[in-house]
Image (cartoon, rainbow, N blue to C red; front, top):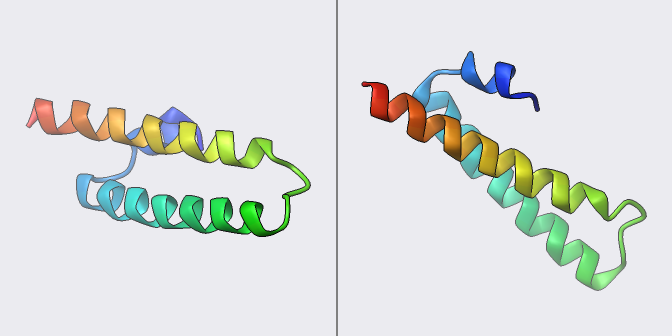
Length: 64
């Protein structure tokens, strides 16, 4: 997800999306432990997307 897409989301939508992405990341990690993923870069991309969303959420909360 691009930063421009994240910036268009509201604060409450961002919080919900962050929680959903964290849950998906946890599931992905567990699945990877059991049987390795074909594309392990998905874990890294998910972590970075979550970090990007948290950063933009903090910026938005600071503005308000």
